[in-house]
Each structure stands twice: as structure tokens, then as C-alpha cells.
Length: 299
Ligand SMILES: NC(=O)c1ccc[n+]([C@@H]2O[C@H](COP(=O)([O-])OP(=O)(O)OC[C@H]3O[C@@H](n4cnc5c(N)ncnc54)[C@H](OP(=O)(O)O)[C@@H]3O)[C@@H](O)[C@H]2O)c1
Image (cartoon, rainbow, N blue to C red):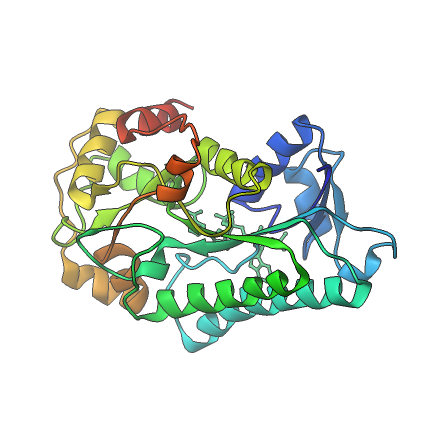
């Protein structure tokens, strides 16, 4: 397979994916709202388009990697922002599907985003077969997955990446680092909530693994095999930074500052196991949190 159409290619995960995929010889095309900004972040060989209608009639990517989405953790969840979370993910996925149908094109595989928020909160380990607890994150992920599932009617293989907290120089860790560097970090709320994480290199590896392994389909948990509690995560991050990490953030403060977003993304959590990746012999570069954090912090 040689040609990949990517949405969200300019983002944290997308940028790392594009860099790796172009080194492997794939031809890449990124759909972006802002080609000038995307060009600064992506290898020069990546084609940038603003609209699907710019694509030639015979353009037929074998793979679609669909990652675009308004960031969830950037602030409080107002009704307006919630609508943008849906529109940026589901409407775009629907447009991709309509585009393929209109062109009579059947991609071999679609790798589409989702998140571990699919499962809702829980203190017991969950894998791809587990049932979910309802809530805003669950509904958003479920609807996004259903939208991508429509590609199956074309005979396309579809994987939904139920992605954990991706550790790298951007994303959640970048937001945590400033207080932890000042020794102002610590557990959030009870500290007992699960944190299912994955190193950015393994995230990119997991996407490529799903592309290259035709037996994989449906939901795929993109998380490391050893999820930890929030308290353990704080301690590990403190050790990686050589700073104490004992200042707890009370649940009440999280609720006051961040509202529903704080409750679902910070105070609640889940212990997610990457069953499908492990069964299909995916080799994690960073299975353990200590090494993953040491690498990112040193990086
Ligand atoms: N990073 C994580 O820890 C994590 C965890 C779970 C799930 N995910 C999901 O995985 C996907 C990629 O994550 P990421 O961390 O790479 O995200 P990111 O850095 O925020 O990038 C997302 C990309 O989506 C596009 N986008 C943002 N807002 C949009 C909007 N309103 N309409 C259309 N496009 C929009 C942007 O591309 P342009 O500006 O070029 O259009 C942006 O580069 C996201 O959908 C995210 O929800 C990420």
C-alpha cells in the first residue's frame, strides 16, 4: 500500500505519523484547514489540500487515516464547544465517506480516531470486548466510530483507535509539565482513577501496525499494556523530573476550574488493556511508564 490520505495530519499524532510514514515511502496527502501552518509542521513531500474537491478524479488512496478533531482538553465544555467536537469529527468522517462513495472508491483500510473515553469511568481493567459506561465522552466516541463504520459497507476494513493519553512533547504531558517542574504537581482528586497512556512512538507504530495487518479490524485500544493510577503517574513524573510530586489537586478545585471536562478527563479514568495489539504481536517500544516518561522528559 503506498498512498495515504490523512485528516488531522498537522496535529500532534498526525505530524509524527506523517514523518514516519514518508520515511517508509508512503505518498501522503493531508486535508487541513490551514495549509500554510501545516506546511511548517510537516515534511515538504507531503501534499496539502484544503478541500477534498481539490483531488483529481483518479486519486484513490489505499489508506485513510482520520484523526482530525477539535481538542477536548483545551478548556471547559460549553454547548458551543461540544458541538464543535462533534462537527469536527463526525461531519468530517461523513464527508470522507460521501467523497469515496461519489467517486466509487473503496479504500483498503480506514484507521479512524476514537478514545479510551469510549469506556467511561471504571476501576476494573477493560479491553475491546468490555461494555461502556454512558457519558459525554462515550457518546462522542461511539458516534465517531459509527460514522467511520459506514466505510465497511464499501468493503473497506475499518479500525477505530481507542487512544489513551499520548505521551510526547505536545498533548496532555506538555500541559502537566510546568507545575511538575516547579514541584507544584501531584495527584488529582483521589489519585485512584486509572491513566491509560501510550508513548507517541508506539502510537505511530500502532497506526502502521493496523494498516499492515489485514486481520485487525473494529475497535483497537491504543494504550500501553501497563496502565497506572493517577497517583502512580504523578509519582513517576516527579521521579523523571527529579522533583517532588506530592501537592494534590482537590476534586472540588478541578470541578470549579474545569467543570464537566475536569470531571470526565481528570477526575475519572479507566484501566484500558491493548488486547488486540498484544494478540497481533505488536511490539511496544515503551511498555512501561518509567522509561516512556524518562524518554519524553529527556527528549
Ligand atoms: N493526543 C492524545 O492524547 C489523544 C488521546 C485520545 C484521542 N485523541 C484523538 O486523536 C486525534 C488526534 O489527536 P492529536 O493529539 O494529534 O490532536 P491535535 O494535535 O489537537 O490535532 C488535531 C488536528 O485536527 C484538526 N482540527 C482541530 N480542530 C478542528 C476543527 N474544529 N475542525 C476540523 N479540524 C480540526 C487540526 O488540523 P488542521 O488545523 O490542519 O485542520 C489538528 O491538527 C484527535 O481527534 C483526538 O481527539 C488524542
